[in-house]
Length: 183
Image (cartoon, rainbow, N blue to C red; front, side, top):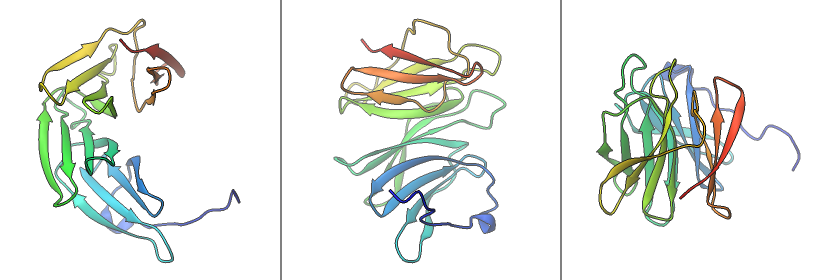
């Protein structure tokens, strides 16, 4: 409302230069991934903002999605960037335990929970090839993908439009956005 900076945190002691995705827990708490160090942080806002590591060791920690109903934080990893070794996982926030759901898969970026049972996530596949939108079904544990209407090079964080059952998917290498209705 004021367009003024509301807080500043110094992560230099963490030796990260690639804070990547944010997920909102509540009005006073955020999560952020550090792709270069493989960590996920919980940021507490308020009078004296601070952060704590809630998970480390996720290679290329990237996309985050917080599911308030189940108190779970879904995470995708970009991997090490040299080969397709990213994974989809979940952090159970009651005890910060991490469980790998699928992988190694690819160069993973954006993630969202759709219709309370399917995890949609993007995979760059390779920097010189079209990427894809993958789907993991939490009930059946099946992994599939969505055939997109266009090739997407560099599919990154995306927006899920629940009203229209569509995704807004960036085409990073082209500087465009694809709006795609889901099946």
